[in-house]
Image (cartoon, rainbow, N blue to C red):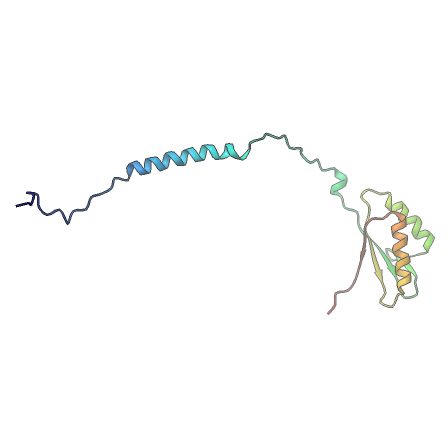
Length: 137
């Protein structure tokens, strides 16, 4: 009647051949691998290289300027007066690299004395000045 001789095909599924799909994907992958590095560097630029001088590698040892509560100043633990301090700091400012001055002051030192010491360091030409404090508990 209207049935074919082969009859019942319901149990057999048609399989898709994936080999051409894999081939196309591999070709696309190769194309992207070749073109991606070309897209990154469109303009060729000769970049400068940094030359590090020996003077930049050396770091000057910091100097400690301490002021006690009586206003006496100590440079690297040696008592020093205002005029000698100015002369010493001017000589140190000419060195390359310039040393850092670490300022330590007693808790009861008057602010005026600390401000004068800071002005002395600045007027001598020292560019780096740090304050030494104790961490709070």
